Image (cartoon, rainbow, N blue to C red; front, side, top):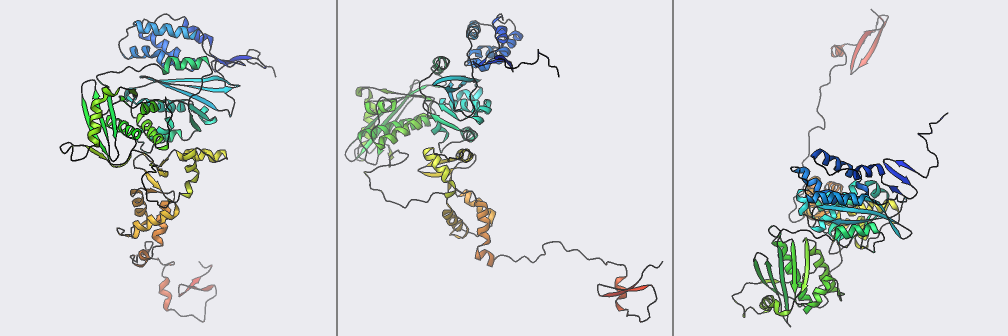
Amino acid sequence: MRLNPAKCAFGVSSGKFLGYLVSQRGIEVNPEKVRAVLEMQPPRTTKQLQQLTGRTVALNRFILRSTDKCLPFFKILKKAFVWDSKCEEAFGNLKEYLMNPPLLSRPVEGEVLYMYLAVSSSTVSSALVWEEKGIQKLVYFTSRALRGAEERYPRIEKLAFALIVSARKLRPYFQAHAIRVLTEYPLKKVLQKPDLSGRLVNWAVELGQFDIEFHPRTAIKGQALANFFLEFCNTPEPRDPAQHPLWVVYVDGSSQCQRSGVGVILESLQKQKFQYAIKLDFTTTNNEVEYEAVLAGLAIAREVGALDVEIRSDSQVVIGQISGEFATQGDRLAIYLEKVHDLQSSFRTMTVTKIPRERNVQADALAKAGSATDQEIAKMKRQVLVQPNLSIDKSQCVMQVAREREPEPEWASDVIRYLRSGELPSHKEQAHKVKLQAARYTMVDDMLYRRGYSHPLLKCLSALEANYVLREIHEGVCGNHSGGRMLDIKAVRAGYYWPTMTRDSMEFVRSCDKCQRFARVMKNPPKRLTSVLSPWPFSKWGGGLGRSDAMREGEKEVFGGGCRLLHKVGGS
């Protein structure tokens, strides 16, 4: 066998593969494709601009924030062709970047990959890297332009959208490696919130099939990644004051021995102003009442549809803890701070500012009015808050009635451990299965709930609780001894779930004594009756014939159906 030397290569150190230069150093961009872009003149027609964007798309994997660099080109393609100064500047920056493109590498199978996310007002981008000997090496750049309603997503949803875009485009990497998303935003809490709906639920379920973990962003160990965040993440998003005004929220709290109050003033740049006085019908400390004021202000701002808010308060402790300058002391303040961060995800931007007390006089007056007695302000309307604004009340000052802890569903023990502490089974396939299941569940007040697309949260029950629920629905006060399928539907409507609820409902109805005792007896045959035809013609005519003693030779007596017939055998 003779081989063509021009088509065969054995033991070479580098070569072209799928349009890239692959060597021991890594994956390099094809110099011919780079030269084709560098030698281009500024486009003069729409067709030349399309050639430029097409050649740039072929190099997207190597171009940092490629969509952002080519965004001026995409805008003029949708309108009349006008090559302006912005396009000329973007064209020059693109050529300058391609003069020294980055070097990509192929990750080792089974290694952990790290992903950095970045968003702006019009694009989402990501960078996939892996670490070797303490050095982070680039694997892939992804970028996508936001279209239509996607541009109006809150910043935290844009980050989730950047992750879902990367997972769809880099699916082979996500399936073969464990992914660690490094971000400073509470992206994990947002995707696991119990009140998710719409697209966030779909994204959470879609991402549940991959081995994804969220960690805080650490030190960046590479110049390319440093440029990624320096040029992209810190770019301020332009704000249109007419469409998205900045709302300033003045908050203050008043804590006394037996009563407390909160004052909130919501003011926009268009001089819209809302004032609220809230009475706290429970005991609080000075810092707790300040947190209650911040939570009330954020809740009111969310109701009016504010996207950009600025919280102004005269409490140095609360402002310092929210901004991260001060450490949080105590369990209750930590829960308050977590609640503030959860509400922060509802806004595009949220800033906190410490102001002097003399600039917060109106909010202080409202807080004192909220803490006053009913006789002192008989003509003033105010809201009353009867319990602390905590997701988990850990108060030790107020006596609480202890109740027996409800049993946990035994069929979801692995999912509960994963949602609580991130613990997974040691077996790899079982761990992957738990992650897929956990995407459809959430923990609320330390209890497991199942979430869906078109129904509210369903409480997950153990076998003992499921039996009790079926009995109450079937034969309780409002029970009507319905059938198995209807019993299953009623259990879902009541807000409960367990995996075998359809089968258990059928078996419960079959074992119900009253249902069996008073059920209608079906006398109809299970199948449609059909008339039986005679097997032989004239078979009934021989019923009255007797046996003849003298049978002719060649005849045989046949008995069939109680009739004795004489048939001639072998005769013609």
